[in-house]
Image 1 (cartoon, rainbow, N blue to C red):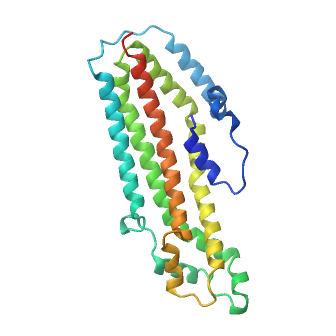
Image 2: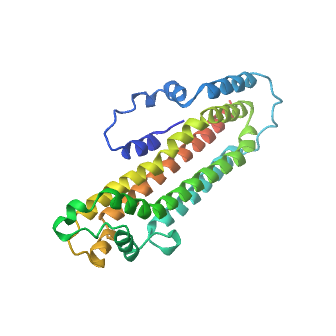
Image 3: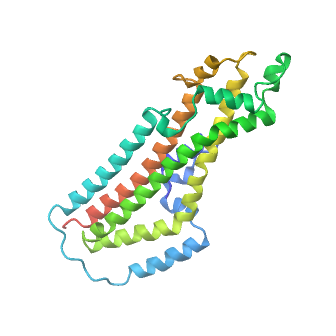
Length: 272
């Protein structure tokens, strides 16, 4: 299911203001919006299987609930720390982002800076600027894609790792884990579609920022003018920060889903 952090991230990338998601607080409305016909049929089939009696698991060991919660929190904390490291020094060579010289070279090679001086600002647009935006965004988009892929891969692996421990907490916890798995499978396509909007949205925001920055350049562009884009509070740093916010929102979404499941299963498996 979608979460407020993820919904806010998608809305923040829109060029136009959208109406607030009034149904976000209604779980049934959100769930219905995330399922297509195939997902609805699959969920109905899985729900019918949940009513079948299952062999009760052995009693959970003392402290098992706390151990599962600690494991989930530790792994998610490690993932958050790794992502923070990526964006702490975004232009470190490990991230393979361009430096000022590479950005200037792209602007020159695509013809953005080759307009006649009398018409410089008006001419710095169109196809040349679109080509430059695409080339410059490519490494930023690749970095974002790698990070988002890591989030999906590691949270999915953690979910699978936790499943046996959650089911071992008791029959009610096992039923909750199976229900969560069924809902996750039924809504997977729509959730992935929402996530797929993020990187293209970032690319459009990047292109808008580049257009404004190029328009503010002087007629004679030197390396120091482009280097200024890399300073704090300048447009390129703001776009990197936007990337980081989207990454954090996706992590908050995935971590929130996992921890809600762990806490719910722990409560369901607690002795009466």
